[in-house]
Length: 218
Image 1 (cartoon, one colour):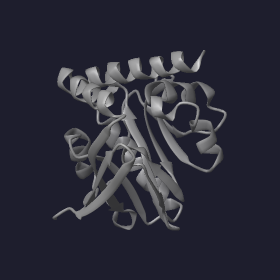
Image 2 (cartoon, rainbow, N blue to C red):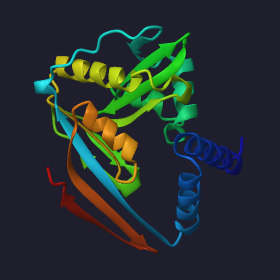
Image 3 (cartoon, rainbow, N blue to C red):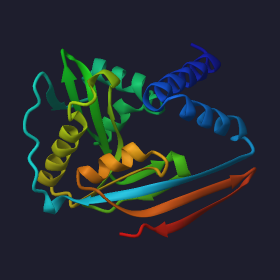
């Protein structure tokens, strides 16, 4: 498959996912942002965190769903994850080999959802920023639940299991983030115990770019 064909496939997948998840308005808004992207960009990314030393909730069981942490041998599951989250394409195996942690939820043998967590250096593509997380800190790269498997509490079960595993390994904090207009994602993060703490405003006009930081009021 050529590079142009691959890029087209990725964008078609993005359009389909945004249509399914957020509707026509999101597709049009993101389409417009893509068209003007060569000239300018502007977005605000909100970071949140949770103290893993203060966990109280237990994950429990979910009927018809099994959970396990993936390894580099989970070829089929890795392919499903990369097909759903196109920005991860071709990278999940390498991330796992570099000690990233990924929990998968399986229904009838196929991926129903996942949470990918990394350590050390992390790149935040939406604000084009790299951050070095300290020892005992982790970064949630991506959490996703396939459309047909939603409204079952699957996202909560994924989070609670990743929290427990990180705490068991001695990690103190887990960080994550979402665009400020991604209200469902931010509301979900709050429900499972994350606390919002800073907004990163990213702006770019041609070759000039800047970032502004503003603390989120409690």
